[in-house]
Image (cartoon, rainbow over all chains, first blue to last red; front, side):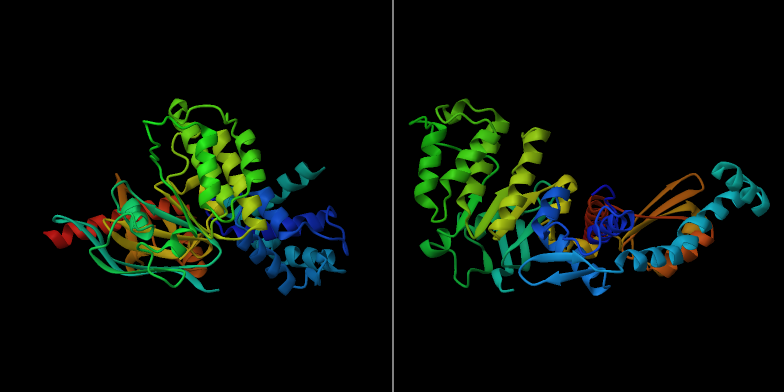
Length: 118
Length: 299
């Protein structure tokens, strides 16, 4: 995994979440097996299992006995809502802090955002 | 999970040198373990005792519930791949002779897997082992270690001399095969770096003692480096366990063993820079802290 400093199971969990949000992993479809995930990301299978179990606990994935792990129906909506809740803290706060450091007012920052998004 | 290896109060003295000093730890069945430490930390001595090539001065080792010394049951369940494996000089064995011997020794030997690995690492069966390069000799060890499928497989510095492509091949083959055939695998290394993601658990040795024994995922993200004006850094670390402190001018940097999310955000809001540190850096800082403590206590 690219970030050597954060727990790998969290990073793998985020990747899977992003794939669900982007629709690459469709609801009610199977995700790769633990062994496939471990081999692909070159991580310990126990770590891959931990990532997947966390998503199962959160209701994002569900287990079909003897078949594998599947994306839960409604998982995409649930994840989008979760990510919207953490958006401000993760993205706006650092933006404001950096702006403040170099003397940009909130109004100026908003103007810049509007200009860039057109 | 059951414990496959148990080491308690193990010491080994070479004259006045304590190569191992009351080492205790346990290894669970089926997992990939890293035995990490600097050169001379005692890794190879420890592995030689586990594989009964050396006798401990004190302490106990049990493998699969039995004492390993002159125990054929235990020995037939262990593959020990040494860093500097010597092959007999007088009979000049070829690669195929070495593999033939391995096939006889290891109960779970998989010839098909061995053949595949030989092709992967481009090892020629007809080549004399003595003519192999350092990296190829290491690769031969890897082939034997993996194809042995031994319940306990120990690699002592497996990748020294192997090029990056061969190393990555090793990780890939190891992971794929481990997933199909779980077993206990121990790596000894002084560099966690690129193998870090494979390791479930690490044990760090320093001066013959265990200074860290933990699940890698628990270690990741708990330690941090705090940077900023020295005065502020000093204030921040007052109640934290500091592993290492560095200073340049009025600027300081502290490596701390553990930091909570709320502490971290508080420091950031005070204008300090707080970053998690890598496993490799954590091990280096821990090792340094330990040798500093030792020097102080020797004073």
